[in-house]
Image (tube, rainbow, N blue to C red; front, side, top):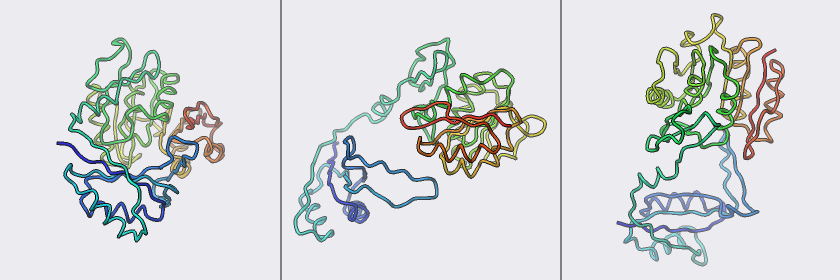
Length: 305
């Protein structure tokens, strides 16, 4: 079985109504992206959680997937009528053959070397270096497969800084990758926190996959639900939080209270142009600075005063 991919370029005015109508007339899926992607006219758009702006690209490309026998000329006539256009918009068609989608997806994820001793390895690959610390992780229900620059920045920081016997808090743990890495790198105990119950379930599954001691790595939806993986005063030696700029700003008092004096914090999920605002927020408690950069993202680190 094969499918037909229909690509139409429209201005922002028509994006919402067209995407809805495509589903109504039989589209199996609809994808919206920047028509100028990959050119100098590319228009980056960023939203923070809970702050969807509704903004779309000035010129958007809409790709709809249909069954192979779909009547495309009739579909285009319907689209022209719905959008009340004087002429039919230009479109492109392509055929998508039947494929082994599992193998195709897996082929997109190769082992990632974070450092000479730290790798991220999908379950369908053999570790390139059997003597390294190999984090076994597949793409799944929660953010954090190791492929994103912010995850790599945090992993590299953990690799360089974790000392044996330290306690670590991974706030916004997602897939649990940073918490698992901290434990494998020598932390005595780790607490992973995420407000998403699916992330907690995924983190626990990944910790089990990596044969982590369940008494030394705990995942929870609330910071205060378990103090067994922290110091006696409820504070940890190190915090790593890979979220986004606005949530990190709002979480500053909570994260400040969670780390001991002299302890360290690492923050990512922050674009370079957002760094100064986050630094200014945390500087009342930490000696903060930009520690690393990658592909437009930054890692901020600090020592608690």
